[in-house]
Length: 210
Image (cartoon, rainbow, N blue to C red):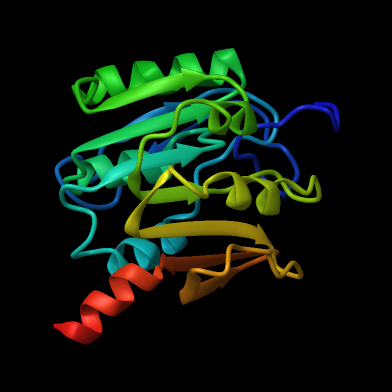
């Protein structure tokens, strides 16, 4: 893996020998175990972090349109589909990892609602935008990709009150658009996850008027 690539969601720990499994923890696919490709550093988002995040999103996940950037194992997007999201788009650069993710969607019978795009996340965001209500952004650390992707999501890729989960190295305070308000955050080892809510002047005015 070279610094010029935009890798998938990969471990910040040492790579493990051999493949593993991803366990879904809630919803229709609860307790289902899916294979994880034997690829250096590839790992699911930890169970504890996923459980915390989806507790925060409990009332928002059903019916959500989900975008999972730097998808890797697809743990977050798959968890969202399990909990009732209407659709999920997984963007993953590594063709083998993307193929395994597509196979796992097929295993779950989730292909009608889930699709995999094989390609670079920033290049994907340069395409024709479609608004999503929930975005997962977990780029590799120390590549300066978090701020670039956050900026590229505006305008066009986010619904009026979308939620965006951003995971970065713990010491980094990510630069995010002014209309994103920090909603919750969680620390896990050397990473920190922040959940933002998009607030525009228009929807703020509607709430005041109501």
